Image (cartoon, rainbow, N blue to C red; front, side):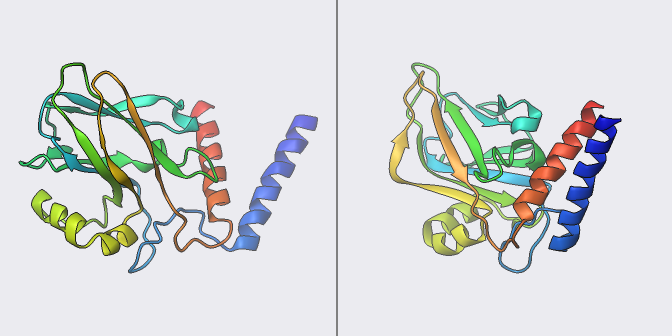
Amino acid sequence: MIDIRMNFLFKLQIFLLFIMMGLPGRVFSGSPGGEKFFAYFDFWIYGEGLNEGKYQIFLKTNLFYGNKWECVGKFPQRSDNLKVSKEGKLLLISRLKREKYWGQDIRENYVAVKMVSPKGNPTVSVKGMYIFSSQTEEKEGLERKIRRIENQYPVLNKKSLAYHVRPRVYTLVPGVPYIEHVEAPVKGHKPGVLEVEWLEMIFKHKRSQS
């Protein structure tokens, strides 16, 4: 009886939180041109030598998906959602699930990335990483995306959901994992949006286990 009462009070508090905030209970990108909900995102890696040798790319799942590293791309293996430019400057992984990798923590909303290059692998360098909504990102070739990175970076950074531009180029050391956090700044959020998202994730996770 006590457990039922506590559960009711907890749900009542959540309900009141939603009423006071007047929010729809969804996370929005906050990108220019209007707030758009995104379920999938595209991940860009900008650098040099991305078309050479062998390497793997991992993203870390959030707490509700085990908080573990998951391989999302292997080069030179190709797939429908993994593309590399001819000159090796840009690698793109598309249609990654937002609810799986987004939101490592309620106040540290970043995507954790790991790249692993085996011993004896040719040089692979990283200059920056970008994240865009799969729904709103422009349909264009990789060469055009490279030109946007190199010539329109202030606009590109502002339009992205998250990005990390390295102050110095990082060259992968074969056999040594390279880990980076691509921070997702809060852009255009109303107060309480992140809290509502976090509660949604908790409830969804509990329902999936019941």
